[in-house]
Amino acid sequence: MAEISRYNRQELLPFIGKRGQQQLLKSAAVIVGMGALGTVAAEILARSGVGKLVIIDRDIVELTDLQRQLLYDESDVGKPKASAAAERLGKINSGIKIVAAAADIDCKNIAKLIGTPDVVLDCTDNLETRFLLNEYCLKNKLQWIHAAAIRETAQLMTFDFRGSNGNKNAPCFACVFGKSAAEETCDTVGVLASATITIAAMQATEALKIITGEKTTSTLLRLNLWQPNLIELQVKKNPYCSSCNSNSSYEYLSGKKGSKIITLCGRNSYQIKGKPVDLEKLKKRLQRIGENITDFGECVSFRNITFFKDGRAIVKAGSAEEAKAAYSRYAGS
Image (cartoon, rainbow, N blue to C red; front, side):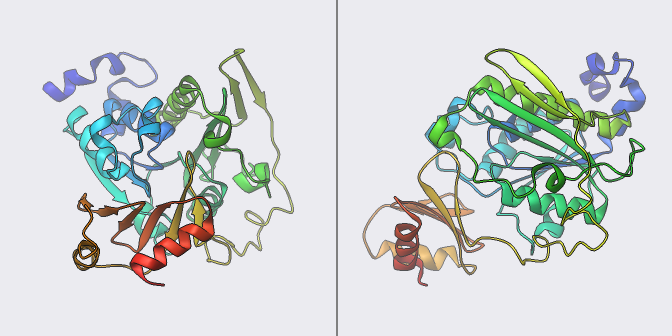
């Protein structure tokens, strides 16, 4: 009875009802990126009763994140975002299953991390991961929702590769955004918290529609919070798209495209991919230098570097070259 009454206000909505709530409780959603968008979307879906939430993020919590990433507080600074978010979500709703992965999603691990859920939410901060998600969802006929925000603006688009909307000629992410130029980041131009919160709420709503079988939005939505205004753009499938045409080689999913060094959004930090490491052995090596080491279980922080057990490291540096040099100094080449 406690679980039934928990969702009472949601069940009163005619487009959800008790039947829709049961669908939510039996569903699975994957959220890639637990930053400004992912924290909001995850909290809404957890409170809505989505039965299984898989949350994936490669980053750690920084003080500058707290302006807009609502699941974290000052005590979380330095922790992996995935595990910090999972802990908070577990307190919000203990009746659902939450799976956290402090990992960088790539062509080698994407199938294991994502699987075949009811919906995938793109809450990432870079085009490379979005192109990878696009190809994975295309190949596996999954529905996914793209969202992004910068400055006072935000955008949203749902990609339905199951054809639930009856449109077999719907565009994919690559059709719409193609070979987009280098993105601006919140590190250089800033971002309004209300922009990230609003678009993430809309993204979570689209996820609820997908799970409950309601018709989703097929247009590209662009929102300006400061004006405010909302624009709907009709976009067409690109017949020459390298991702969704019949001869697609899935360049990102096959590993033909991808970076070993990635600039992270929001600060002068770089992610470097290396070989898996034994964190205990690494800690002992670093302790010989005689400085404090912070152990978060899934990662170890030392000076300007955070090492993860899967071989990744997040390095604060002025350039990619400086980041590589620091990584090699402490972890080896």
